[in-house]
Length: 427
Image 1 (spheres, rainbow, N blue to C red):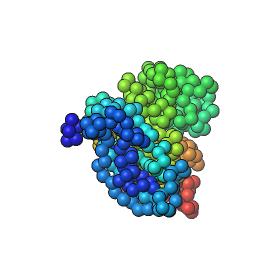
Image 2 (cartoon, helix red, strand yellow):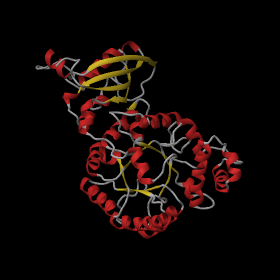
Image 3 (cartoon, helix red, strand yellow):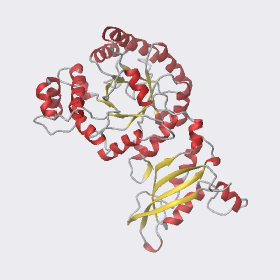
Image 4 (cartoon, rainbow, N blue to C red):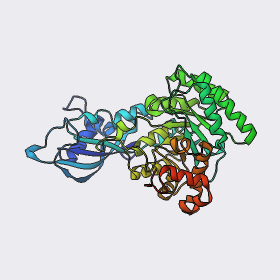
């Protein structure tokens, strides 16, 4: 099969190495396809032509004196460590349209090679056969908006707090209050899925009874993302419980169940899947190790995440605003003919987060979650939810938060509480 005719996956890497960049790229391509540390019988020119990964591009990015990661071989003759961007093309027929085997190819043992003092998968371009195998999100932005009944603005939501420890009856009371507050979206915390003290088989009917009762009265049915993270059979059982009781969303911790687990959930799910990325920090926080969110979110979309957490601007976690902005734009960039997923802003958010978020992102196609930013509003959760809606209303209409707050007490009180008036600002 000629290079021109074979279907390929393109993987982009940031590397740091004591080797010449071109030699390092050769090591990567060989290790993850036909080669090993030495020549072996059977690795013919014909086999390499059909199955070898090929080097598409190598771009130098400077040099450093010290290695970013331990365990790398030293440079020869006291030289420096080189950094660069490498693009490799992997023949899809090596692994087929298979998410787990794709990961073995584009990541595999690369992170363990002595020839690298830094290596990070930064992007992926998937071949068309993956779209035929994996249908992607079933609902995405449009389907989520339809089910939530929210158009022309973000979905405003919150997280059940305390994260864990509420009994089923205590949760019932909280959901009643939050649904009456007019929120669009509520989610379980990632810490709370199916604990023995509040099992999902009891939690789901209690929560949905409150949601349906309030929806009958107000006409607004809040979307609740039940955390069904668990073993394969357990997730199916809990998904069916949510469907049976009229729920409109399920949540899964992607890194706990894996991309294959997410794809399996998507194969039968009748509801949007709220993808939580907890544990992602250990995969990405070191800038010269792991996987960048741009590559990660494509795998999540392929596996079927309708919503995906991206952190939030001016949040409580380490991630920079620039990184969050790139993450949102990545989620909103079409791939494989669509595969849309709704970015979820969270982490230390409040009404003060709306204006900088809208200014930076220039989109309202997000779910904006505020836990303490709603629940800790001095006038209660209803005022907290109102303050978030008002803040987005002001931002989208080009009105300063301070001016709008003069006319809207809920917004003014949120600004006083979270630092926007006589405070430091921020979220």
